[in-house]
Image 1 (cartoon, helix red, strand yellow):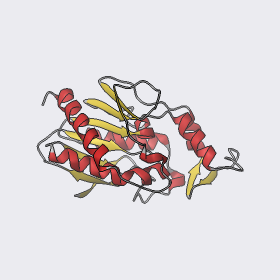
Image 2 (cartoon, one colour):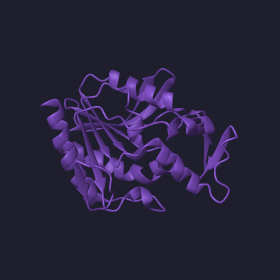
Image 3 (cartoon, one colour):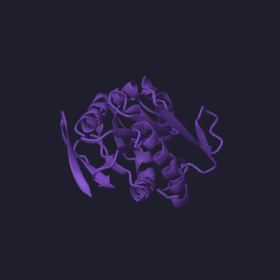
Image 4 (tube, one colour):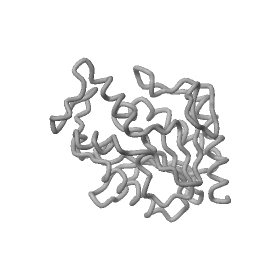
Length: 222
């Protein structure tokens, strides 16, 4: 079901899945091109959670997805404020789930727990954007730069450079393949965000849904 939510700067769209009387998983996508590559997979993951009796929401953040705010007007504070407002408006416990740099946006939210898939620090995201912008790289003296079709404020890149995923507990980290960073669970699967085009992996979605279901129940005692 498509719905909307309020935040201090206006309204944004979100998708709702699952029963109306269960704990809620809020899934945050990474920004920019990785959101396009992972959205189909994310929807499959949340539908798999619904079959297990867990509700979920997939919000668009300001300047992302179907937002009416121009991408170049987006900033980290607004993203975090939108997530915080969405969680505060819930009448049920919310478990925060995030893919990659989506883990940068739940810092201030009052969550029952966090589940992060391959969480990425903001500096790593900015480095990857710089590689995409080759051969000229990112002109950090310009107010706005265009990378892979996204017009991004350089002020946002500066904010992301200093941002790190929230490490408040309870927190569970899941990583894929040979990712060497610390993890509570490692699954042998190819990361969709590395593909040249948007894709899906239903088998991986089922595996992750099992883990996120168990984690959500543990966080809320349900």
